[in-house]
Image (cartoon, rainbow, N blue to C red; front, side):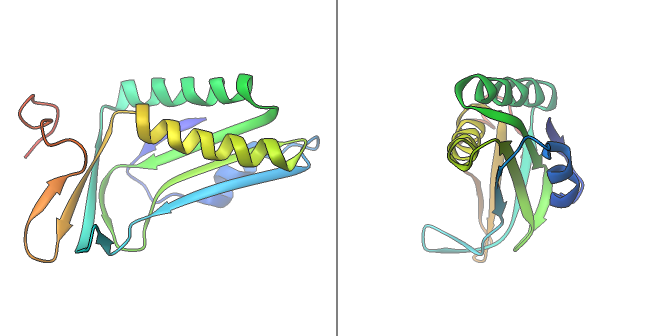
Length: 146
């Protein structure tokens, strides 16, 4: 299960989706909005995504994880819209028969999501400026709204 949502992420609900009597291991990752980036104070974030492609690529990543690692189930939910400091932006969880596979797959999934899924992050700084992270050219090409 891969999902893009504008709703608050409920980790317990997602965790329930990957539970399995055959699982002896479970691993999760929560990504939260922090109050700083590269020495600058951050007030909030805004995420945008190309929903159809993001969910397709996210699902592909979860399927690849199942082939690459000995896991039973995996899920990832990523929020879009404006998020405040301390809010959860992304949740990844994995169940497996043994812990090593769960740890490895969870780390691999979040790294691949950050690398491959078309989700963009805009930071709003305390000095009144803002900017897209690793996507300075995105507005020029019409990928993002100002």
